[in-house]
Image (tube, rainbow over all chains, first blue to last red; front, side, top):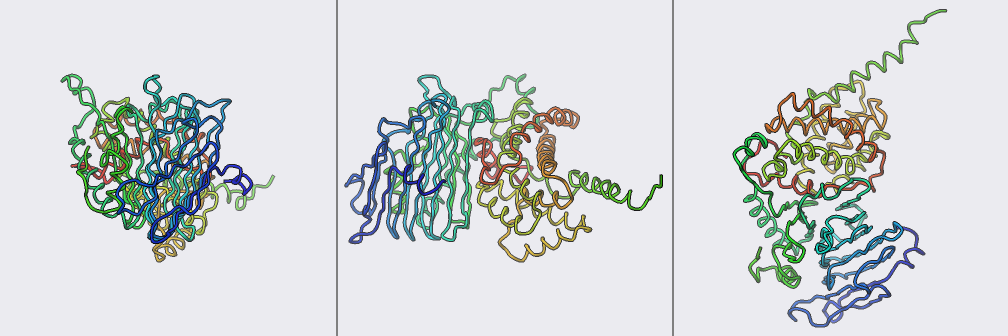
Length: 308
Length: 240
């Protein structure tokens, strides 16, 4: 990640949340151009102990060559949500420069950090690199939503960017790696990105880690199994010829999702490829708003019907 | 000129014998259970992502691409340093990297089988058996496939590039075999396809070889999702 000097230059924002008077509170908040944090006082029910942070980029997006580092610390037993006000637009690359967005977070014992931004949208020729590193305790809780759309639909851009690399790494207290995931879509290396993703317009990864999320994990596993089992047909034998002759037209599923358990059975990751248009963000099946996800997570009981 | 038979033939004989071992390692006859896994092909067929020969070919290329980007680093590093500590470190990192449960379990099952078979078959290389026994007891080693494959290749004297090429070879071999068992292609068609794809596989090898594990990445997210769907199949031929 570079030396301390580089870190200092790149650090555009940092927030520390600790318990003050029994409630999760922001005890330190720093941001400088192009990053800005908005921390509204009243979000959701007053019964829930949570700090909501909206992260904004001046100019509404990430410009070619931007290098942004933000650090977060969530103290023991605290809860923090980090989200955005709109999708993160990554503008076209100028001179092959790559934009970088780095996040480092420390999550304390029995604490919960939820990173639930709007999706990233890379414009044609954009080059974007994102790395999120989490240091957690054995009973920390983490919700990470990391998703990307195919591009600006109105302009006909579909998977037309040059580079998108997203890294999510989770380490335990002793430095042991718990989760190391890198997704790399690079036009130069793999040719047509469209071919690898086919007609899907959104790729999402959702990670649920920690004892507080047990209920949601089970819910998600069952939900995904239910949806996918319906989509998958019985085996059909030989390929194409017979089907074409008979005039079948069988379409591919509009949503491909799989749910995996990793680590010591306390975490779940979910991979989604949604075929929906970017105008409806109903990719997150079990909550149509971020507020619903958080209420579900925090109160550990079903408040609203999970709607598809 | 005197021809001294003893020392001149020694190294050449050793090389020739080594080739028998290397070929045996790549032979599908070796009982490592590779044929229980379809690499997501069965799920892809049932979800209509693969429904004709062109889509099958594309699918196989994507599997090879993702193998290159994600797993070759582990084969590479294990083959250049076929030691216990290297193997254990790579195994731990791969366990955190294979976030897809289906792929992770398949890797563990194939790796365990390969280590068991390798240490029994290549008995003239006692290090394999020693390393295996040392690791079974610990409970912290998962026995993932790619590092073990690299370890055995390195121990057998294959250089790193050949080891990585061998890994690409067996991956392609196993997916194509799965395709024939799923009735997607006949045995002759499969052999023709395997030969046709060799240049693709070689190009993919060139692109992704000799990288560090820090650079290991997924390049086919749809494939990853499809592979993870194997558990939702109503009726299945393969374990993954």
